[in-house]
Length: 362
Length: 88
Image (cartoon, rainbow over all chains, first blue to last red; front, side):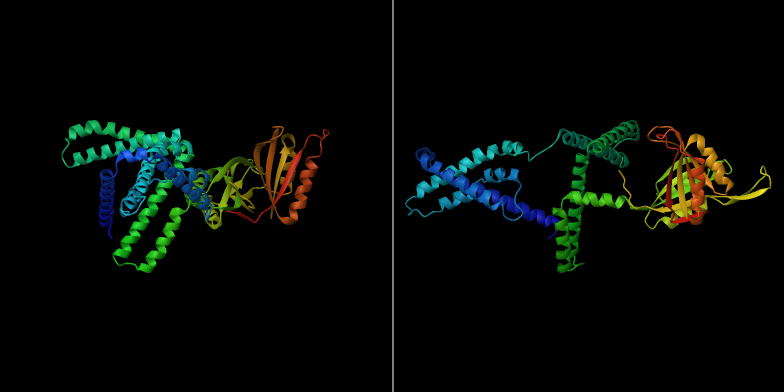
């Protein structure tokens, strides 16, 4: 099924269910006399208690099987057992010959009424009470800022398009575009700020990004199998992988992205560099994305200032680093005239490399 | 190849490095401060061949004799194994 067919089918059944539901309630309205509800209140009460008790037993015993259900979800599961059209339809469809028919019908009606009005309306406070919806002040603030940023970006793009297609004169565009652009940038910056401030908000956005990424992968995969590019078998294999990733906590995902960023440092190079070469060395090493620490030092023999740099060596990078250092610190031969015998000395970089047993970034 | 990292009391470091250089050792000096008493200390980095190590340590020991004040540490010496040494 293509995406648009899916939406169509989904909407069709949604509306069919809505119509059927309305029809059942209409039938009930025509069938049941409200007075019998008041007359039969003792049986209705028994029915409500029985329904609640049965659900309590079901939820609290079976939710411990398998992986189990988190504690704060159990009351919600219990209280969430809303009854509707099906119970009513079943009660109405009882043959007229059954003796207790009207009792059963009023019980069903009473239970449905109770679940819809009492349980249904108290669901929101319950969920809040169980702290299942936790939206901190920061998260709300993030949502507001995010909405503003997206809005002003959309506005800017829309006007830009209008100007491009001639709906907006160049004069007006030129006068308002800097204002809009400035606003867009400011709102985007506000979003960045709050993401930076609160790791939890940032984490939420990662979660959204992960879900979107996986959903897109999945729909692309469905497209591939629909167009006959891959076989059913491949599809179900890969789809299973994506489904596992979707259920996996994004923490793992986040951690795995972070881990890839920090390469493990396996060695340390202390390099004594002549001052003239320092700039080249730093530039060449930063090209390799290698972290360094500089310390000013002095060579004792010539008393000349130089720099000692400590270089963390990522695995398999030692060769590249030494090459970069070789390139940037040229070996020179200088003649010292102020010593007694004219002494020739070579000046370049001196490298000591060590193994690093442990490396931690804190 | 070994590397000696010697953290030496400021007043003594000149003697130490002169003595070491007289024997042909190459030294790099780093300005540093001690973390505990925050007194001036000089860090010397000395790359030495394995068979020269004892000679270098001997010179450092000789030039930084224990002071009268037992609380006062004149030099701290680390010897680190150098995996690779080169001049470029």
